[in-house]
Length: 236
Image (cartoon, rainbow, N blue to C red; front, side, top):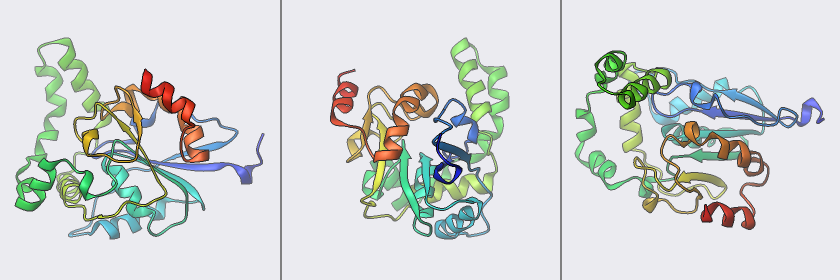
């Protein structure tokens, strides 16, 4: 077993409006890794993404950490990593720069249409399950209620704005990007230099957790997967 000093501290940041429950099935070997879960905080009035990242860094209690972010959480951890030393930076179901945003999001940023999104609709998630007419919709409603618990309108308006208006033009060279080839939110056709997950959707951190439990330790330690494993993954 590794000494306590050799334990790698891994911090996870959930996606927009999501809580740390999205990582409930993720397991890392306890003799090598210690998992920590960050939660969304409500932004201050007119708070920049940079200042928000600096506030989030106050919840990081270790040095030389691994930062893992999902979706918009992937954007936030990239901003956080600008001000702290990280051993590994990993994003999942996210983007590395503005060019990887889908056209509709870039269009929304230019036109300001994102301001018209009724974020208050999330307040009705609890009622959706009662109104659902079949088992599929009821199951989907239960998932929304379980995982999407951050429904503060101030936070949601801020998060949507900073997602579609993110100004990063050049990706970090040391960034590790894991992306599903069936992601409808951030289509893989816009994504470059990633570890692809065949059949992975935008919520693959939940429904493809076995893939992550199998491969994430190696990705954390080495920054990627060996070619034989990559070939096997692509053929599946």
